[in-house]
Length: 173
Image 1 (cartoon, one colour):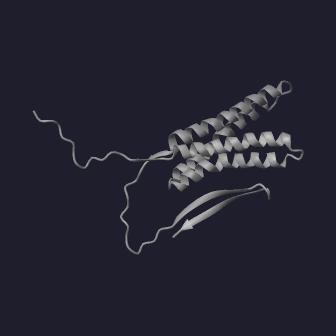
Image 2 (tube, rainbow, N blue to C red):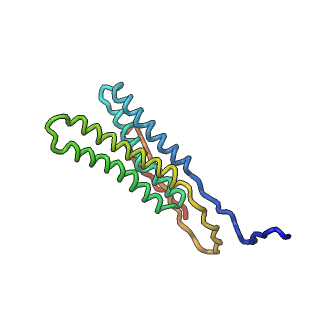
């Protein structure tokens, strides 16, 4: 008896896996938010804590989408942005809905809304970091002579001395 043969053209799927990069970005965001809380209590003006907190929040919202765009996955980048803004917003709306017409015991309702917001933050990170960061690689394109391609990259800029946040656009032609 002969053994079954496999076709010569069958190729294994190769993945572009950048989930650890997304996880590191979210870890940096959480670290900056925690540092902001610590610094806010340590500094009389609270400026350093506020800046660190805002930098962490911006890193959470924009970090994942920037990583997706850097890996040439714009659809996943916009999906990541929608998750990172949408799920926490649903939690905030739940909190407003619960605390809307409260006359007493509003703190409990606000706590439920806060927990729902942080649940949205965590859910968005898990979905983005765990599932959106692994994509099948596209087959390599044949280079054509004389054709130029444009590639853009984004990078966050944080300058604590000037209390400034920014976004840098890098391009190659």
